[in-house]
Image (cartoon, rainbow, N blue to C red; front, side, top):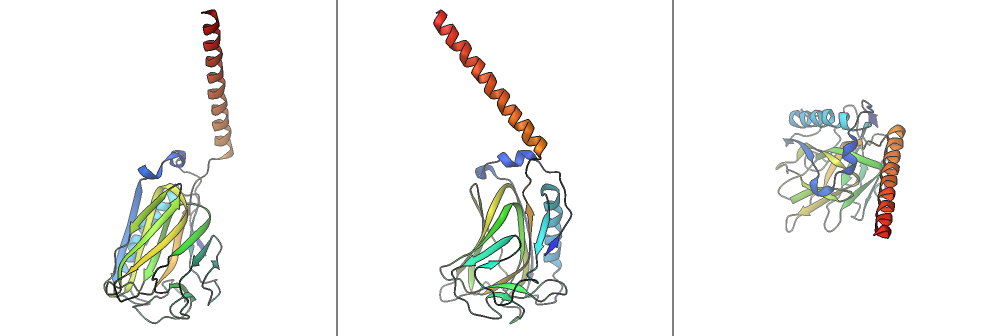
Length: 251
């Protein structure tokens, strides 16, 4: 687990934005066919841009590298800030759950510098994988490895909070790695992976170095001002109602 720069500055207006009008920034980089230990030039650039955009709007940004997780855990996997659950079948080492092995460029693999572990998604047929976070988030980004257009027709990421936002990921043709990140002005608590296979095929892939920014919450002083403001609005409304009643009686 890695934690980045902590900032207490965040726009309070974000808490009132509806999902229908959500503003999002998408960060995506693909290194098609580049395998373990390779130079992920495009993915590194996308990750750096995502982190740079996440820090100013988050209370803190963390990255789960899966290095401290127990190898072999599949579902549920309980981590520091979130839990992974899926109803898919477990195909074991190199394919499913917390792994420290790899079957190469076309499945899933570790991307943490100096690390070895990652989380493998088995070949989804009619199931999804849900990451449920302990606190609301404002951003999420992850490395994805092993996706191939031969097997997969679509991978989507859903953010679930006050509403649902869905995003389609670009697909690598020859496996390898990519980074995909989202910064939203609407907080969310669940991230759901959906994968759709091509007819007659099933793809297995992995994720690693999943970064996420915690949504800002008003400071106690801000809460006090808000409560005071609500009280003044209520008092004003009550006075107006009394004046209306008196005016009606006099009439």
